[in-house]
Length: 158
Image (cartoon, rainbow, N blue to C red; front, side):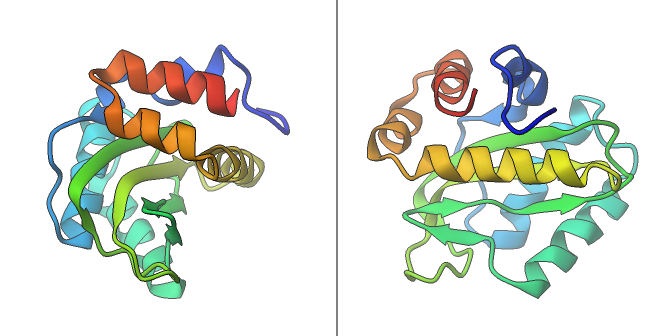
């Protein structure tokens, strides 16, 4: 992965199996585990507990609630085999401790291998830039299925 995410890389980064359109748990740690389990079930995570520990340790450092209803828990860990992104949305919101005090209704999880610092930053910055746009957030809220989420992300971050 380079400075930007290639168009074809979106399906590899976030296949349909990494997208949950069912209501996630309302509590932050349980929501993180909900997203992590999508990656475990798809075979991307070799050691669930190590990955969870890395994600929760990152949460302790500083908030991953970026504001505007967005939460992006993320971590670098060798418990994941390749850069991976998972997504869920919540109607009531999950408290990720964002600076604006708003709960996250769009939640993305980024996991990259420990040596994937550049990938981590590329994914995080591309996603953050895309989510600044109201229309992208609206389309993610309104997506009827996983393919619509992928299409929105492909257009927004690739």
